[in-house]
Amino acid sequence: MKDDDEMKGTKDDVQPDSSAKAPSQQPKSSKKRKSKEIAIFGNYRNYYGYRIDQELKEDPRIKVLKKEWFEGKDCLDIGCNSGVITITIAKKFCCRSILGIDIDSARIEDAYWNLRNMKMSDRKMRKKISEGEGAGDVNGVEHLVYEPPSEDPASSIPLDNVSFRKENIVQSPRPSEERYDTIICFSVTKWIHLNWGDDGLITLFSKIWRLLQPGGIFILEPQPWISYKKNHQVSEIAAHNYFNIKLHPECFQDILLDKIGFRTVENITSRLPGSKSGFDRPILAFWK
Ligand SMILES: C[S@@+](CC[C@H](N)C(=O)[O-])C[C@H]1O[C@@H](n2cnc3c(N)ncnc32)[C@H](O)[C@@H]1O
Image (cartoon, rainbow, N blue to C red; front, top):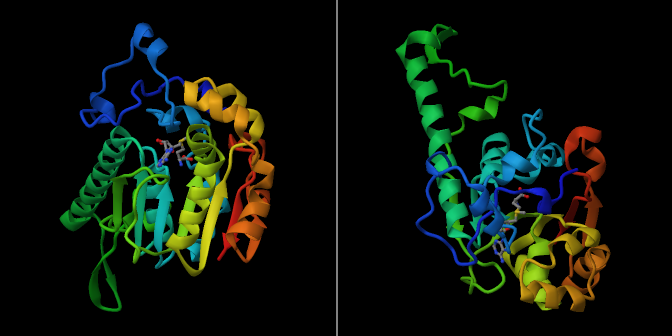
């Protein structure tokens, strides 16, 4: 399994960088530039290029998710990075809407770049079909038979229901009427913990609780405590918080059930495919 700290395609700036270019336009990092890059929020550039086993087509975490948790639902992806998981969930599970938020505006730009790319390839496919390659006759009626580029039938879903927003979940004020059916938070808690300590973590969990509809699902993939050590020197604040953290990830389940108020939990990790998954952390689904 690759840990977050092994990834070198990182962002060098603490402040959101609205001038960031789309991935293909970004200059190749020189050694000098790389040595300066520290992603203090886990806001890595090229996260998925490094994070996922290159042989795997799909992020293995997607495999443990159930379609019914997303289909026709309003969903939120906290710490979406470049939006790969967000877009995949939208396509595969046909959400009514999905919003990806990230603290780093450069990652949000990457996410919109990925979304535009995906929409463009979908449009190209549709055009190809309308030019005669996919027309079919069903029960005497001429139908457009859309053959998606992959074996996944959901890949033809238009992506108008996907959006991204720069937002710091810990500190942003939220409109009180905003509600979601499903919220995911993958590989983010360590960064919130290191940057805002135990208070930040509790703020995150409380906010998620408030943002969920009754009966809604919160899917959490927390990083293990052992991995904090490798990142605690990303900043002075992180080092300070690291030594003062009392709520270790092993307690998150109890906190969410006993203090925050979630009704029930399921550890869905057991559905992860074997050793080459690249992810061997618990993934927990909580119901409000
Ligand atoms: C390690 S990446 C995980 C990306 C994605 N969730 C995944 O698992 O594939 C962590 C992401 O969380 C974002 N992040 C960290 N703190 C955040 C905060 N307070 N609010 C919103 N996003 C945050 C970072 O910018 C980064 O893109």
